[in-house]
Length: 326
Image (cartoon, rainbow, N blue to C red):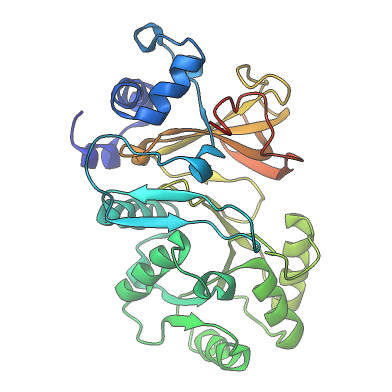
């Protein structure tokens, strides 16, 4: 394998070549992925195209340690879950590389993070250990040149006051928050944030009734006088992110690409614009698995942008998940 840092400067034209290189490496050096390919009777040497690559069911991150190579992980990210629910575990060999991907990916869409005052409203994530989102935002806060940057838990009044000050002083500000907490802020402290970039990370986490992303954005835009609400798409099992600048369509950072597969046939793909289940290629996951079959329902456009419209019911029970229970 070539240096991981070469992924950061990868051109779109070279994406497939790099993906096939990583696939060959992981098929040989990732025991769980190798077993999955063996169950499918896949010969790795016969894989020649991106769409031929089998994607590992995301639920295997709950039951198996997904690691490529023999290097010990330095940190383990875990997903959130209700009491008694099995959570995903993503063992990360190189946390610094994850942060580099996060910083460069944000800059790809929004400029360098140090130029923003970063205000984070992530109570559900701060209240547990192992959140990759908190790990990323901690780095963003540490890089910001504004000392006002920081996390907010239940102190919405203090956050509202800081936002008002930043708005009045024209300070470039990123307010990043989980959906239910942003709705709490909108209901208790509606105010003009038209010069603030508000970014939601999704998830009611059982705190509120689930609503669509469009409904969420309408409520936030009305409460905060916003022209648009931005969104971040990430997962415990990924090292790369995707961003929406307000139109509901996500665009992946240069290390991420999304495909939509048939709901009833996990090894076939749907045409652009049709609803399917999302397969994610994350080249940054070189030490884990770069080819993940998610439970997210969505659509992928001709230009590669994608939107998420929901999750598959009973998502842990799927035709392609042949290793659950082993």
